[in-house]
Image (cartoon, rainbow, N blue to C red; front, side, top):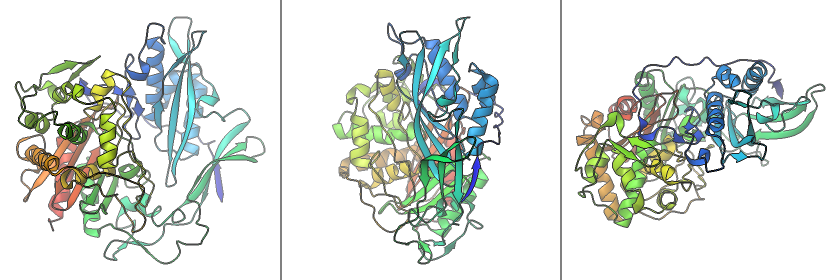
Length: 546
């Protein structure tokens, strides 16, 4: 084992922001500070809501801003929000750099108000460690009012991790095992030289012992003696399996190559991810990430899916018979549900049909239908029909989605349009698309083997027909017109998801053609049609329908 502790400090350079148009329809309603997405939650909403004797909104805004800065790598800004800026910046930098943590994913919980007026915000930290996996733990963020009435994070080592102290620190230890040999579905050898995006994938296929192994240890600062192991990654299988030759994957070399080239050409150098899979059986044909090394955001990322989630929302409404495609569901510029929501570019479609609302991705229309669904119904439909939130056995580590019951009406409104605390990634949304247009959930997989663990119910045929009609119309007459020149029946849904006040919106697109479903996210892509759309178009152009 080779070891390194987090003594070498480094910080990320804050990205220069471009002037941009705000999309306030979904502004600051998500509590999750998503991997690669920043995330934020507005004071006065959800877990930061203030009752008559609740926490001071100014304290909660400071907590939100600190977590957003930390998650986004803006360490000087995060440190400035604490009572000890110099120490805070050094510790946060050392912690992430020394443990090879790419981008923290910080999820705030319900804030607590103490009798002395101090505020505590518990949070869950998911720390992606390059090429190993995600280290998850819980901690608390203390805040204290200052003499001038402002609020600061009351700095202490234990807020970074409860066991970080003056006498103990963490050390990352790696065991270099090398990635196993792997082939595509036809036996074509897959290498990271030819398919760079497979770097974080090939090290994980073929079972728990196939890829890199390592651990995060708690050690004595003076002696270096290990006191406990906090997290293990890639444990070697006890039966010695994993050494029997190349691992046969479900990947397709042609699709994989086209996916990587599409991201390289069309993602404009932004963080982005793409998944393509077979509709009839869930087999993954391509997994691509930009940048190509490091975190596998396509499968393990956590993002608000934005308006691509309207596929699930529409399913829930259609299953109940709560709306018909030709029913009039007005699409005003604004709708207030605890806060003001509006549509992209404040568009409006008076007297629009539900079909028009879907194809033009009208946020206000979908939010106006929230009373048609029970508070937990979106999550129930997502799990029962689409497998979202169940335990997936993909063949590599994956994040399988989350659709919590909304805490209030504002969060329920946000969840109707794929914001709030709804979380997904390209793998999940490609699977959602495949299920919607086929009617049957198939556990996504990248290797042959056990794909059990999920139990779902097929969608009724009439609902499937309606979803296909809506997605096809989105290409011919709606926000996915970028795909309209492609031959064959192509259906799609775009999405735009706001993540924080400091970042541009993430752009999404999901699509289907023939037996393949695709999902792509481009971080800070501003709009789905303008950022993810060209990527998907490039991919589908490069690989003819078969």
